[in-house]
Image (cartoon, rainbow, N blue to C red; front, side, top):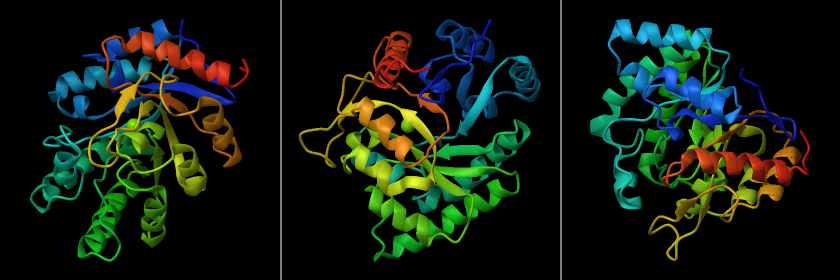
Length: 284
Ligand code: MG
């Protein structure tokens, strides 16, 4: 039997792509093993299926005792090899890729609507400084993306990391659309070298609509080379301060564990749950 889990008042979930599952059946099995029923679902694998198979998978999802906290969409051609490659290839930045990515985002939005998701996260790419011409291009593209999602009743969540929190806040304030928020990932702040994750929570405040539980250590050359992702509790995101700051900004949504590296994902996810529980003082 699947059981929902709460820590410090938050539903505890996991990112589907952290589990390495090849099917909805495997996802359900993995959630059962973890004792979780909340999941942020990568939509790319479902979009990649042939229609009959996709219907079968969607039916299994609908029957499962699972709550989808949000969706996630990424784009073919994004290259995370180095900070330079992802700066060039990530999200909505590339003029060459924009039309194809807009189309994929539209497909993801329709699927999210069908799954009755309210939130869909993505890396929109690096936002240039506001005094550069590329800044207004990104404002236009994120607005266009948000409009497609709004038609499905879905909010677009920008994953944190590429910008300092203050720069992201300015971008959010400069957008004249309502359905754009933040998927806050504390580890990304460290991996990309863009500032202290705990401070960033305070800066982004009410814009934070969904949260990843992930940890990392900054590199010796922050912003030039990647930091390293580690299991939650083993890095530089202080769990207790993280929970307390989320409480201060009155974030009440899910905490969704993400683990993108390492050979023992299930072990690390279980460890993250224990670290959260201890940080919350054993509170359920
Ligand atoms: Mg993340």
